Amino acid sequence: MSLYFWVITLSFIGPFLLSFDKKIAFYKNWRFLLPSILLVALFFICWDEWFTTIGVWGFTPKYLQGIYAGHLPLEEILFFIVIPYNCLFVHEVLKGYFPLISLKNFSFVFIYVFGISALLLSLFNLDNYYTLSATALAFGLTLFLVQQKKIWFSQFVLTYIVCLIPFLVVNGILTGQFTEEPIVWYSENHIVGFRLGTIPLEDLFYNYCLILPIIWIYELLKNSYSKK
Image (cartoon, rainbow, N blue to C red; front, top):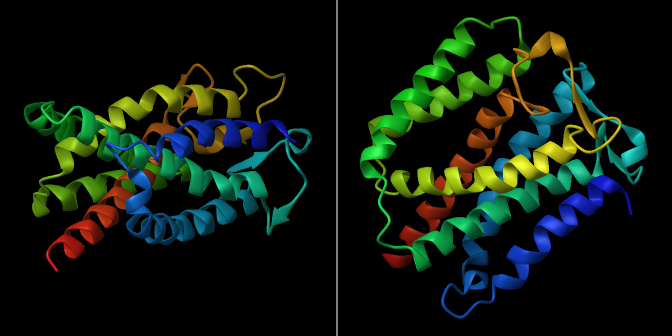
């Protein structure tokens, strides 16, 4: 089994097994989870395929199974299923076990700091495809949510912050923190060049853009069902 496949598998085992915890019973929400993940995954897979084709990023073959769909390895496609699953699991665990934790005041600060940072990075990096696309999308999503005033956004901020811990581990492995070559490499022409260890700064915005709409759709489906 390839290193990338091991990373995906090991990151999934814990959240999957704990999905049957009696208090959270995450498995009961799979009917809301699956359409949420698949809808967003379709967009990100298309984005991923395009950027791989034009060389914004790519993959080191020796760390892969060798099974491809278009230009994307199987492991990369599974990434868009497994990582959102794990993040939604964390989202429900935080709501179930730590319901009194509120980041309402912090989320207000987070919106402006994160949103303004995304805007500035996009405006000053119009030639960097990854920087521009990830930060512009992050800014657009944040701006829309400010207008919508979603009550679950402060909970999402907590989820996002907590998920930064496994994010740093998984993305660190993928970007070459512990290997001779990165599993996933990035063209220096399309990133700002600032990294958290080996992780491009843009990945923070990319993961934000991946998780946010999934939780958005997930919460929408759950609320619609509860009103019936």
